[in-house]
Image 1 (tube, rainbow, N blue to C red):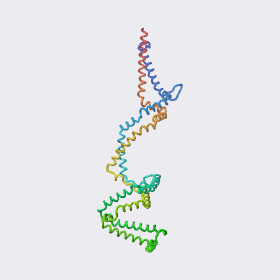
Image 2: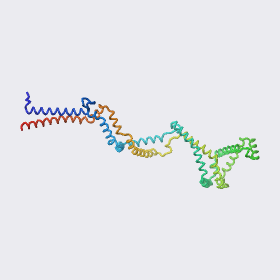
Image 3: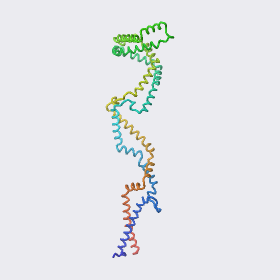
Image 4: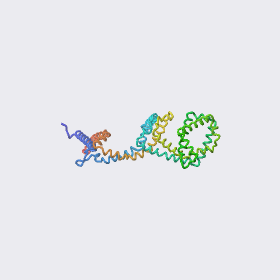
Length: 373
């Protein structure tokens, strides 16, 4: 039998009791970090009890120290996001430039097309008003005079045949005949015409509008054919600059010109929606995609860096993290903590056993010293 009164037996008992007491105490302390989940018999786990404070502390730490704009920008640069962004942007721009685009009407949503039609439709009167204001401005006559002088100097040595091709002569003759018949019809106002003019009207009616049109067209074609054999300098020599300037100003300042400007402006604005865009890259150099991507990438990244601090502030990361942690169940919080600290918690329990054994040994030694004293 073992003699429990022997010093060695007492030493073993003290060390054993101390070891068990220390280990169990630390194990209970670790267990009580999470348990009980709900308050029972006056006991409540430290983490479940202070869950709101823990969530607030984690949110404050993440929002104020871990997720700062400078840290995020630094991490984005380190992770190579900018290089990836530049590469994707270059691919995107290259695809845009190489694609065959249809008209804007088919590319834009119907609501946007309708709004554009309204906006472009209102450009006609505005452009016509601007045109009228420009042609009646004080500097218009000087501009026209300079244009006439420059045109006379450049056109003088050129033969008219370079411009008055057979097709163009026919087109001009047709337009002149149409304009002449329209002017004749518009000028027939009974109260404002002389007897001679009225007799001419009767003769024109007898001849017929179509015959009159054909006569004017043949006459203009013959005149243009004879003019094609001469140079522009010969044709324009009998007419001085003042006369040409007066003609141009009168034509530009006429109500008909303003009406024509409004019609052309409205038609051109509407044609913008109907005309196919085609491949944009055909108008640009071969390296346009890379150059545009380099410029756009730098500007985009600068914009991100400038807007990121304000964006993070509006996110309120601290509150987001706090709400997220509060949304976890107590079991989930315990799992998260144990996944990170389980090794340290096990060390704490083992350290409890070791310290308990040491305390048992020290207690035995002190008891022996006291007994022998």
